[in-house]
Length: 185
Image (cartoon, rainbow, N blue to C red; front, side, top):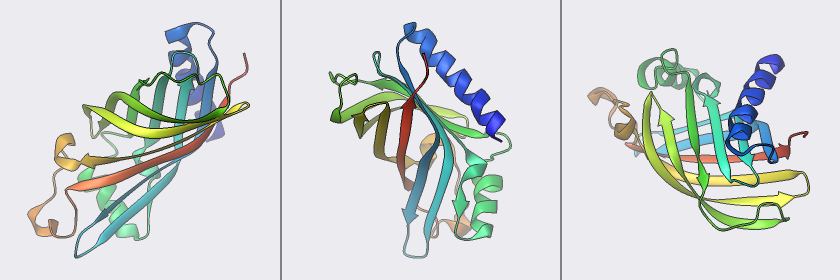
């Protein structure tokens, strides 16, 4: 598994590194992505600690990827239905976000920055433009990121069968957090 993560991160670093030459890239391999939805009938809560991310410190290009099968639910049956019936994880194994921090912030200096990230969010094989508010804290060789945004399931062709429509919300809240470390030059 570690070999796979190293390969993925090398690929991500290469993609972002190619966008800006030899600029510093911060990488994370155990970032957290969670989502939550609530209806009067049921709450759905899942979390993954297998997200990978990269931020180019100078260009502010950003990339995150999470394997759909890495989400853990409190109930195994929910996890099975999520992967098989809703997001079709075998067919669409990852959710990704590729974009750019649009604010005029200097990520080469230590500090905490409120940022806006704009880019393409892809889940269930459907990409949609997304603008997300978040926070980036730069501290030495580390960047700490936090963001929260809503995803409308219908926007990504995730169908909710009528029989369970009272149990599954049409919109889920997604939270991302992680620590990214400066990659060796």
